[in-house]
Length: 312
Image (cartoon, rainbow, N blue to C red; front, side, top):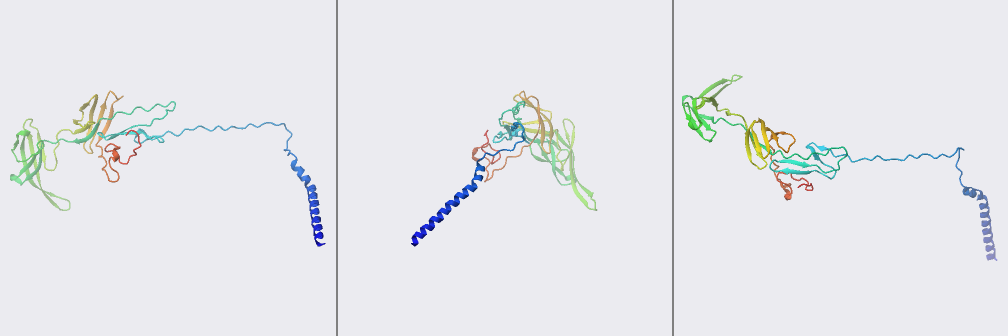
């Protein structure tokens, strides 16, 4: 009897659940039907007019052209495209070929690189008079001068009346006298002043020599070296000819040494004038960065330069 009572109770509860679900579905049916109806957009009542959609046209841009470096207009380092660099071991100068790139319309191509100048400065010298007074022995009438023969390098003694036949010179007067000079503050300075007056036995020209300075003779002389290593001497106004090129030497400066040289060559559109100075010495090799690592670069090329550059 108890088991039958429990089954009846479970059946009653199940029936109530089914009836309750049916009642809930009936109540929610209105909301479910509302979801099934298509939505209706609000309308102003006017006729439909399509809108014009603006199409974006992005601006076409090019990568900015690489500018020239301060070393010159041909020194252009483009993206991943460096210039080809060459080094002349004789002139110790660099030449460069810029990277090839498409030429923009209307832009003139770069002219070909100019040929090397062909000369470098070795030194500027001031010629000396062929006899120099470099010292003395004794004082007064017993004094003798030490004279340097500039042409031979020999040092000889001499005094008034001494002749140098090989130099066509004669000592007209020599003296080594003590001088007393009063300095500011009451200090007295005592020194020996040695001087000599020499005469050219052919022209009669006289030149005064002393131990404090070297007497010059004539205009400065420049020493220039060509690309073959040959040294050439010239004075201002003189012309040097190398092949078809001519070099006219202009103004010379002793300190610091410099020379203005004008080059004329049929291969040049117009003469080129340069002020030549003594090139700096090549950098000394070090243990960390040898001067010519692996033989990739010519002597004197900066150590550590990227070996991937074309042209080497």
